[in-house]
Amino acid sequence: MRKWLKSTDTLLFSVKDKTAYITLNRPERRNALTLKTLQELHDALLEADDRTDVHSVVLAGAGPDFCAGWDLAGNDLNPVSSAAAAPADEDTPVYRSASANIDDDSWQLERITELRMVAFDMHKPVICRLHGNCIANGSDIAFLCDLLIADENASIGYPPVRVQGSPASHMWLYHVGPQWAKRFLLTGDSISGRDAEKIGLVLKAVPADQLDDEIADLTRRFAAISPDLLACNKRIVNLGLELMGARTLQRLASETDARGHLSEGRMAFRRNCQEVGVKEAVRQRDAPFGSGRIRLRD
Image 1 (cartoon, one colour):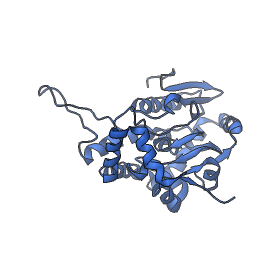
Image 2: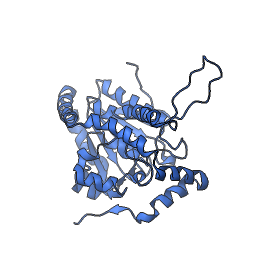
Image 3: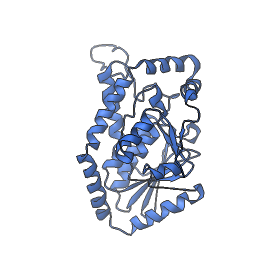
Image 4: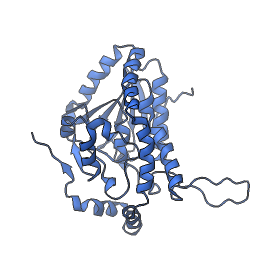
């Protein structure tokens, strides 16, 4: 396959001590995702999977956040490409538009899910380093990783379910079970890294200054094991998830999100973004929920 060896303007890529480090690198946008970022992330993960000097991958975010979701200000309000004007002549192709109908929207969302699924499908383990905000589409890519290690003060959630649709990539059920999945997705509330550890949403939460050491301990252990064996044991667990419907649910989640895009709440949110701007529209979306933070007992 073609080698993807260098960092880009949206990602940092390096290999050290048998570990590939892939870092979302748009800190000025809180690492909000674009189609370009997702395509480059897909390619970088495949590059790491193909390299014989790599045993595992660490996925992180530059700056104060892991990933604050989709870049609403820099893209169409649907997290998809909304291309195509009318053709100039009969030889000019017309492409699907995200806003055209539910089937076109589903098609676009499914293509984006395919880009994200590489972390789940690849042979080598992927550790997600969570700090700051990991919200909305940021959680989509995080939950497809194999192990999540979080700053205990990180914020994890999916606020867009309040007006915009549902997660187009859905691993909530498999991480925390039906009741907690509903608790998050019926309210859009978030949870700290510390409390996320208690319900199994992340493997472990530690103070921010211990995060890199905690991950380094795991990568050292992975470096001592043959990548072939790492692949055997990752893939048998993921095949078990597939037998529990995980892959089918990802496709259904895209279709359900497309349905949610037709809701009156979503339409009103789009109009509000155009009238008052994305930042104010998001503030108004979240205002009725106060802090929006789930807190567990000690």
